[in-house]
Image (cartoon, rainbow, N blue to C red; front, side, top):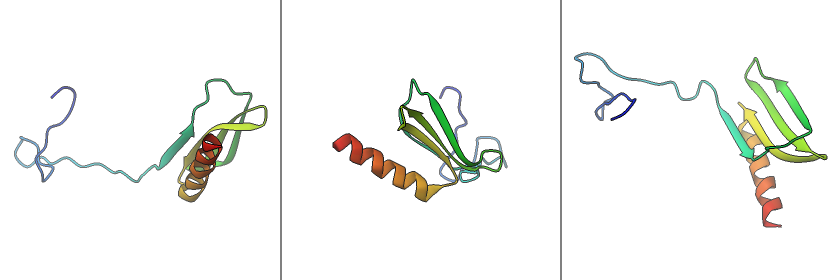
Amino acid sequence: MDRGIEVNEYLETSAPGVSFGVSITTWRSTMWGHAENWDTIKVDGDIENEDCSVRYERDGRTLAMVTISRDLESLLAESEMERLVKG
């Protein structure tokens, strides 16, 4: 293995008494779309408090969106972007 920690099915390392754990849900972030060139960034909420959405727009059209701790808003953005792509 390269650059990792090998564990067994109980998250135990090869060192006696040393287990590995992660906190998965401390920061939920999701991104939809792709934006290389944008003219506007709109932030709704508070980035420092990890509760916001960030929209990357060009000519008034949302190209991509990042959400932090806003699962429903993320799902709605995904659905809308898929609808626009399918036409």
